[in-house]
Image 1 (tube, rainbow, N blue to C red):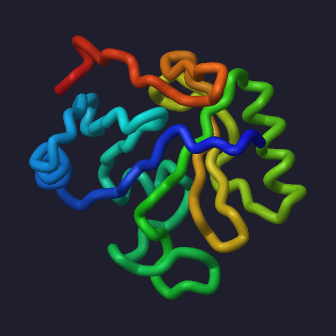
Image 2 (cartoon, helix red, strand yellow):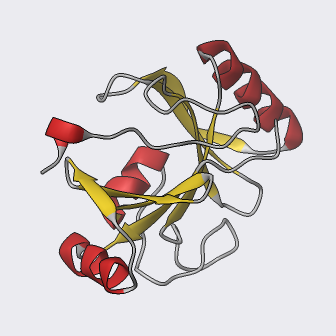
Length: 155
């Protein structure tokens, strides 16, 4: 696994409020299908409904603000990291490495509802990761991602 985080997704309870907060800080995002994407240097910050994010990661939502992980009392911590790769085969290879290293695959690899190949896993402390091959989010040679112009897809 290359040392790279391409997206950080924050599970939020109120998308409008969260988007307004970041915009008040000077950030400019694109809202697409109830999700807000902000370019943040060579990665992206994403805002999405907290419960939907937990389900997408294959974990239980738990109460907001609770610590995550098997030993924690609150379940899902509300944050998911994403590691995008350059092919479907790389998704599968990474999942094998996760299992060998002691992680747990929480969502099997498959083409998702949006049309790209993805999976999810948790590390031994319960931190959620998505691993995905999404040709719409191409990676530069250094692994950085540049969000596309979502154009007509915006809400």
